[in-house]
Amino acid sequence: MVFGQTPVVHRLARALALIVPAGAMAAALVAQYGFGLAPCDMCWWQRYAHIAALVVALGAFAVRDPRAVRALVWLAVLGIATGGLIGGFHAGVEYHWWQGLTACSSTRITGDPLAAIMAAPVIRCDVPAWTLFGISMAGYNCIGSLAAAAGIALLVRRGR
Image 1 (cartoon, rainbow, N blue to C red):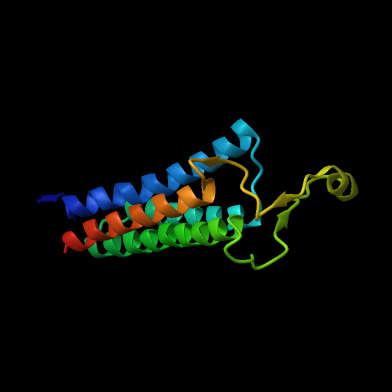
Image 2: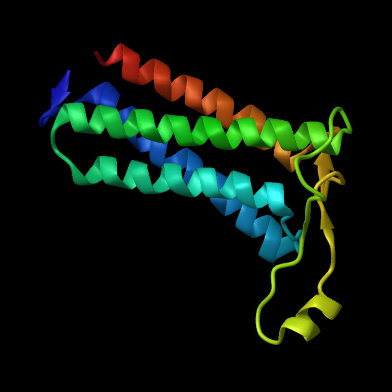
């Protein structure tokens, strides 16, 4: 069951810990740049969690000690789950189950501030940019990220 110094289960968990946040970020970037769906503040919060998970998962490929690999994969699981939980909170705001933490609109400024402010659209967190079967992107992030985090966690525990 051991390949090199890292158990096979840990290798699979490590690979999934990298693939899941990379896939989430790829989907977010395709939605933004391919389909013109600009992210709101809460979308950015979800991205930050997935970026952190991605960086930590990359670190798990840089170390050889199985205990360090395991610890880094657990940290990646935490980042993936955090992105999913933020997505769940965001979905609740979109469905008006509760109110968001801020006024929640995004206007990222680059270049001339006045021109950027005047031309920038207001992206609201309480209005889903896109839905499929009544589930928003934040809802899909919640479902997919929490399921993936649970699956990776089971793999890591199995590898003990």
